[in-house]
Amino acid sequence: MKWFVLPLGQWIVPKEKDIVLNGGQIEVEDNNGNEMTMLSKGRLYVNSKLVIPGPPKKSGWVKENGKWVYYDTTTFQKKVGWYKVGSTWYFMNSSGAMVTGWLKVGTVWYFFADNGAMKTAWLKSGKNWYYFKSSGVMQVGWLKIDNVWYYFNSNGVMATGTLTIGRKSYLFDKNGVWIR
Image (cartoon, rainbow, N blue to C red; front, top):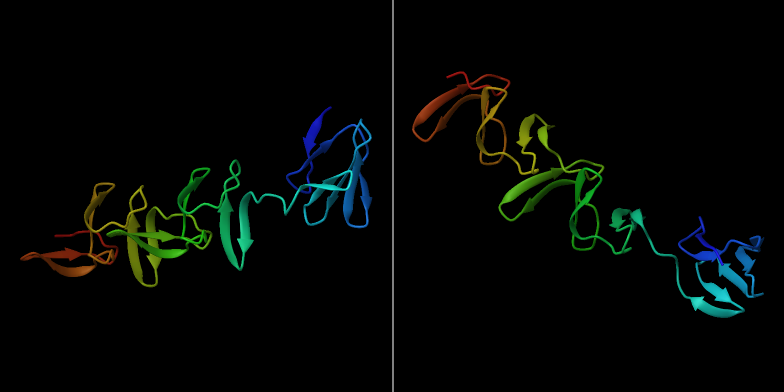
């Protein structure tokens, strides 16, 4: 007997017989004459006996209570903490909700776009510029980019104008480039 995944959920049904839609439920009959019924809420019955209770397993991005959560496509488990989908990193809080905006993890800061993607490289937020390393960590202190030096304050904001660092005064142009 051949089996396949039904597009309406994560259930498998025999392929040999036609699928009949009957009042919001799916009915099939296998080669042995067993009648299988899947109700719209995902419960599967074989010969009127409940075989699989409850809804189909969730997979991928799902919106729950207005928040996006991610269910692993193999284990169907809700992800919590760091998770990489394709080449993009996301962070899900302790309830599994996708984080957007600023997030402090330990002693470092990260920023997540409205779609939840972890930010790397330059970010303009309001009137301030920030830089995030390839790891997503917000840059503080000196940083050389394309042979140009920048300085990022302890709050991550790129320095412009005159700034005293230690006992020395530095001048940065309006683009944050260190002049002298």
